[in-house]
Length: 112
Length: 113
Image 1 (cartoon, helix red, strand yellow):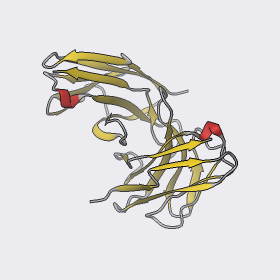
Image 2 (cartoon, chains in turn red, yellow; image 1 turned 90 degrees about the vertical axis):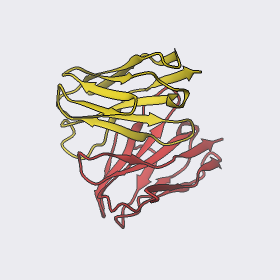
Image 3 (cartoon, each protein chain N blue to C red; image 1 turned 45 degrees about the vertical axis):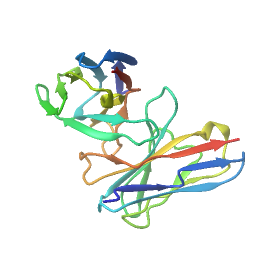
Image 4 (cartoon, each protein chain N blue to C red; image 1 turned 180 degrees about the vertical axis):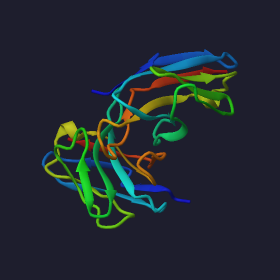
């Protein structure tokens, strides 16, 4: 029972580089989310999706892009990485809009 | 703006010493309140969902309660393995869609043997 799987676990980027954080879920959930977690701060919503082909901005979307071509996958793209994007990123999913949200193990990103 | 405040920020207890964690919220319309546990280097792990004032849920040494303004996570006779950060989050009607959860900053709980 894999649940929500994120890759990579750790990554170091140089300022200005781009990368994609991968996320896949095997629970057939319609709703998927990307959060970031900074030390001493609560989790902040970056982007979310209510189904394949539909995405929307969360609280902190600047500097990121997403796509949802399938129910299972929800990659997060970082363009022109900046030090402010150093954080832990969590992908999550839920079956229903008011259902329990399940999280992946996280991706630690450092921008230097 | 929806706000979730957790207290205390950190709590150190002796094994067997019961206590409570607080989550107070100011939201326009509550759809649900969630408690998660997060271990170092891991993603949040779901514990409970509460939907209406007066509701209570229990799991092993944990019991979550909900009023119209706050939720408590009671920990009875805790063990060292209960050490973790406990996160509270709310799902509200204000976004009109699947806006996800608004999280508090968490309470870092340490249970000493």
